[in-house]
Image (cartoon, rainbow, N blue to C red; front, side):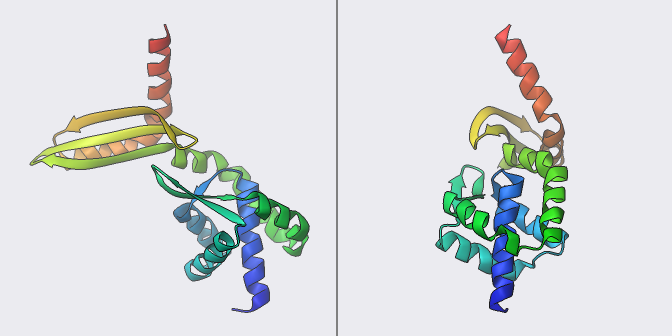
Length: 172
């Protein structure tokens, strides 16, 4: 890849992290840049490695995995070089971020997983996080893998309401 293209790709990632203004997992970043045909997997991996090494992007290890944010140095660098990224790309990134920020935030604040305890018995672990700190956890036992997977799939849609109702009831 040409040096100029690598620099543009790094600026794109920095601009994306600035515009979205929430921490993102590598998978989320990959999904964003590939769905929009901005970068492919290999270019993203190369750029992310270099951005982390040069401390322009911060990598945080959390209970939910690795997350990435724009560092202070990255923000300063972007301030001076942002205009090198074409206005049409900046507008596309801003439009995407505005339309998808809430859903991306929800993805990082809700965790769900299950483990097999015994034959025909599964423990489902559901969490709500704020700043990657668990603020609500719910553990359930179910008796089929299908129901464990159904709980996990439904969690994204019902978690905010369950959390709010529980909090309200306990606060009475």
